[in-house]
Image (tube, rainbow, N blue to C red; front, side, top):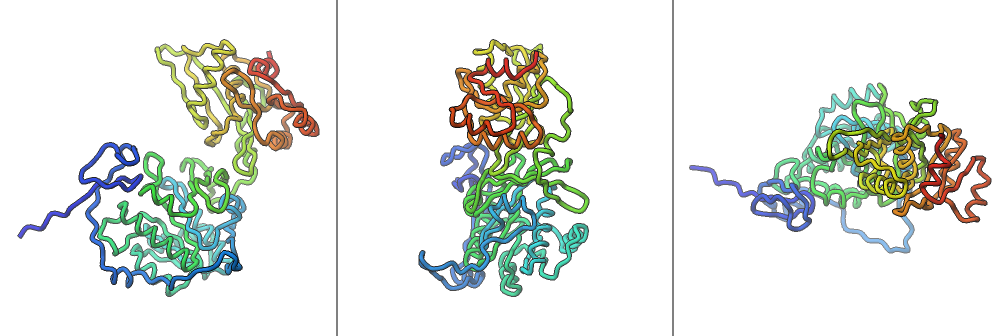
Amino acid sequence: MSMAKMKSKWVCTSCNYTSASFLGRCPDCGEFSTFVEEFEEKQGTIKNQQNAIRFQEVKYTKLTDEAQCEKAYIPTGFEEFDRVLGRGYTTGSLTLLAGDPGIGKSTLLLQTMGHIANSGMKVLYICAEESTNQVKQRAKRLKIETENLYLSSENCLENVISLLDEIKPEFLVIDSIQSIFTSIIEATIGTVSQIRESTNILMKIAKQKNITTTVIGHVTKDGNIAGPKVLEHMVDCVINFEGDKYKTYRTLRTIKNRFGSTNEIAVFEMLEDGLQEVKNLSEIFLKDREEQNSAGTTIVPILEGTKTLLLELQALTGATPYPQPRRVARGVDYNRLLQILAVLEKKVGLNLSHHDVYVNIIGGIQVNEPAIDLACAIAIIASHRDIIVPYDCVFIGEIGLTGEIRYVTNLEKRLLEAKKLGFKKAIIPKTTQDVQKKLSDIELEIVPVKNLTEAILKGLKN
């Protein structure tokens, strides 16, 4: 007797649109190559679902009632991590930590959970992709010793819920959400349905039982978080752990945060005994800079949340034998680079139609704010004409389409950071008299400019 063929469906990982066959483009959200095949789900009975997941009775509260939570924020043990989260983990929140394989996500969370457990809180760490012995060996290397950290390699969500009832932890870690499944639906581990349903259950547990929960998520080869896009909407906070696993520095960046800013970053250094936070980021990004004047290198102060960073921007131009010159932008927006090149050609007369142009931000930081426009333009001109850029000068300003240098926000904060790190001169947009009077108190040679031509004349040596 032949077995009945299982029915399948195709699900868009971006918007959950379902189709009977594969589609190259989703007709609902318009994304390309987002459909994955899944077997038809067989929903369990309502009784089985109620037995599988046991939540406490429904409660409500008035807006005017005083908060019942004794401790609103949980420190991670890293000041920089706390700042990224917004003063630490919010009690009862659900956080998604995503990153490339081998980047150090498990190491970061294990160090964090070790600190939280040492503070007296119970932590349940579900290592669904590793054995408990592997995690213990990592903890030994990280010198983590605590009685309040419980480990389990269980990947069935119903069994995890039983452990929650038994241990009664205040903090839960799932490593990773793609390795967890629930018996409520009959679908393969890691499919859109399993990830969505498991995350939904964990969200209810976090809110109803007031268990602060963090889940680790995989990243696809395109750099996106694996699983349905709705996963990012369900959680309270989405954090990306970025960097090259073959280099020592890692960047923690908030993508979504209901309890704080989404522009904060933190940098960690991977050492033999674990991750160590880097508090002075500007010195890290500038420490390998040659202490001599060089063509094609400029310094620009940028804002990342509440922090001001000084970054080194490098540009390189070279003649190309090919009819289509290359434009390579690393750390800056590609379309922004094309706009700057167009303004340079129109307003300054710098024709680079037969030259390749490469622009790079040292340190792997991605900068999207327009304050780097002037530094980018000066670096390109200096590289092309082999003009020396002053070593002790910073460039701040947005370039308009007519070549004017426009004002940027938090100018005083940027200049104070430049002064702190020993810079002597700053090329900035021309400001109002009130702003100029405020900036005059900073012990820095401030040179206001109206347009790109004036910035070139005052910012470069002959």
